[in-house]
Image 1 (cartoon, rainbow, N blue to C red):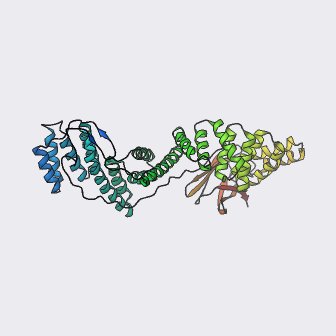
Image 2: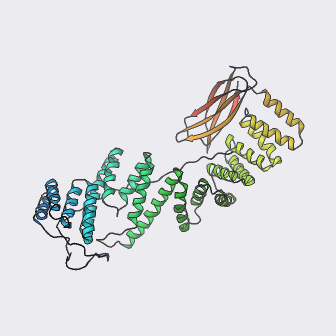
Image 3: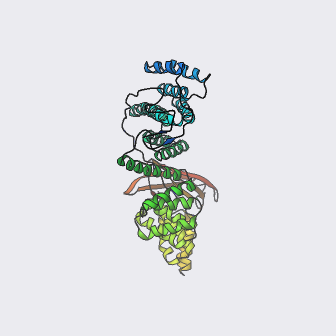
Length: 465
């Protein structure tokens, strides 16, 4: 059965420093009228709730905040909640103090309480949230510029806890988390990014340019999220994102391939096959994409189309043992004996110690009525010193691994057999690796492993003296 392989990539752009201007602090936002409804500059009509009322705790806390003594201001704000828990002013001031101390998660909780009691407090909390966000965001930029990923993650993590109306910190944090292998956390942040992009500020109206930029940002975030779902094999979650993107860009072949991959991974091979067949007919797929197309088509029992996909792999990678192996197996399953004769011979050249390859080539000759070729093939197969079977090609970033089994055959136990594995990239030979093995007893097997220090896309091997 063919096996698929491929890689997914996340993209992210780290943005420039932002600055937050000084903000005036008061218990009630300018323009609030506790006796009637409050309307934001963006047209939000707030429920009245319980309006804030100045107290001796709040007045003193404000003075300490203006003197940049956040610790004392926090103590007074928290103390004011005791005798007056329904007064939102103390929650607002406590949130402001927490934010200016860099304790953004606690600040966000206090601001949420203030807004719950008096919804129009959003007009006060939003600027304070953005101010705290900017401080943490800039700390993250400085840490990232200093190659301190851990501190950058910490700083941007604090930024996203307090404010989500700007996506910069969320995007940067998600990219770093994904790069650190913390994929579930990255997904959570990407989702928070999308939620924030769906909102608009309460304190100012976004320009047409800003709105257009947010749409473009949303598309980029969805792309990253979809790729991350594919990378983690969370295919059912990737599908709706990919479909939505295709609605906006129906001719995007990359999105079509990704959707087919998601459908295939979710076990919906018939739907994936339909997309892959259309892609095959138009051409332009690279060898890895074609390989994965062939795998899905084979799994769907569409052997003729699978053979066509693997044939195109062999045209792009003439020395791909895996490409020819899967092409031959597809032709065999489709009982296309005439094409299988030449394909089987080529596979034997690239995989000369495979008993399976030899048997398939002999079967093709048998179906063609060439008894002499059948006999010759069987004799050659019986005469090889060892058999090499179950080869698995495993690209892994900067390295490439080939695993399999060595099975004792014609050579005496312990006989040295030398194999040269040659590795290829899209532009030709990358290098080779010599593997020395000793023949196991007849019929017994031992593991085989070849490690090549390069990102190969294909390989072959041969027996050398």
